[in-house]
Image 1: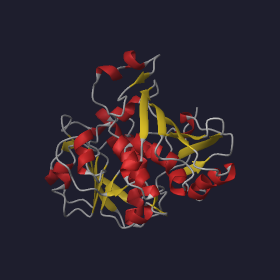
Image 2 (image 1 turned 120 degrees about the vertical axis):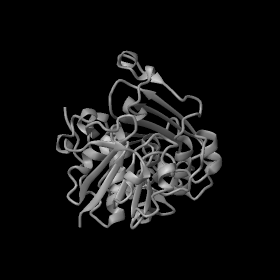
Image 3 (image 1 turned 90 degrees about the horizontal axis):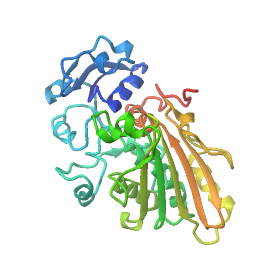
Image 4 (image 1 turned 30 degrees about the horizontal axis):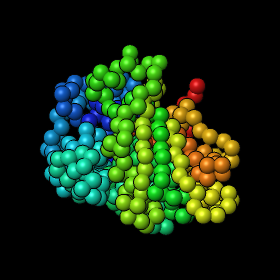
Length: 350
């Protein structure tokens, strides 16, 4: 069976990456692409790398344009998806790459985003531990899916095994992330100009203000069975001069007198059979270059007995595993297709 697809926000980074991956999916027909200010223009004018989709023209983003497809992907700025999802009740599968349907707490939404609160959907991180099972079980046959925030899913995948196994203390997490500016979207912003980011590293959303914090707390609480209030995280992202990628370094205290073997076993048990979340051998740590273009989260684990903390270093491509790849992986599960279809573990090098 071939599924018809519409992609909104198709002129942006997330929308373009969704299209790049879907273009090689044998079960998908990309029928409609939409935008706002760029409506009426050829898709390739804004996504010149998508040569196989040169026949498509960006249409206006309206509920009427998006309706009538088997699958709709929404790759819109935060707070803009809800106005369309409410009108797509007859669409068999809708996947939102924005934040509108990620959070279960209205209070958290009000505190970090504001505006209208929308019902939470199935969270699109299949490998994430939730109450002793994987999130993929919730995604099977799902009709509505919230793709993750790239920083949030990276940190959550980094720490969920240790939190779920009770070997690290989720009340004292510190995460510092080196991130590429494509995660901030394609809109023109002075602080993201090449002349502003080349040759420097710039922290942002410092001091507990980043919007992905409640998403991380929600995911780790689900992994541990604790309340989100029990998850305390100091989260600091830093923009570095690479177009794609996240390198997240997260630490948390070791609980009690658990052994090194028990600590490492928590991550080995969680990810030993996974295709797209891989624990590296002891003493090895990932680079962002290793995941460029791939749907993989590569994870390195160190046990710092002097500080009595576990350190987890995780690399992802923020536009693939962090966003579009996670969305398509979740789509495959919802449709009953092979989970890895149209997704690769192989990066691009050099």
